[in-house]
Image (tube, rainbow, N blue to C red; front, side, top):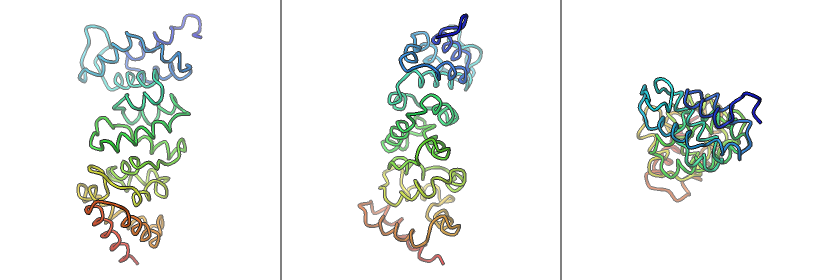
Length: 260
């Protein structure tokens, strides 16, 4: 129950969104039980959030749906309101895109026991359409959660393909070392798809080659064993794959065999 003189949650949430205060929105929603969170999604809040999401940067609103010039903080506050007033499964499927700081830092506070739902839904979303980068913005937060120990390292096919699609994958793994021995080795056991595969990654980002640079680096630095990687290559080549992918794994096997 709100303290005497304090606004009701729905009113306080609307004020937070209109003023572009995502942390205030979070603090309104975080302590509420699910049913009360859902009741905070009022017609006035929907109107404000829709107006914010559909308007350009720096816009002003004569209708008063937001205060001042529209900025990123307004969009983030609207996102927090949309997320926090829905059940986890619905929030994961329907609220997008989400800026990475919101996904990484605020979703764990809204859904501390249901992050696995987001990992599952987001992994499937990437697998379904890996080129929908705007809609998928923020889903890589699952790897931050894994590094923080909030979820196990993801093992879904979509999550594996999402990981290898990261730009500067070498640097990304330096920041997320928990993935090196868990999620990343699964690239040998999952099938790629159009828009997301080892072969396509190295063709489109040759300066950041997974096969030519990253895998040999992981072996040289002792993260992976040469003989183990050769076994993984054999596993990969025994799976049903496109000829495009099979060529990539044969070339990787040759490079690893040449390492001494």
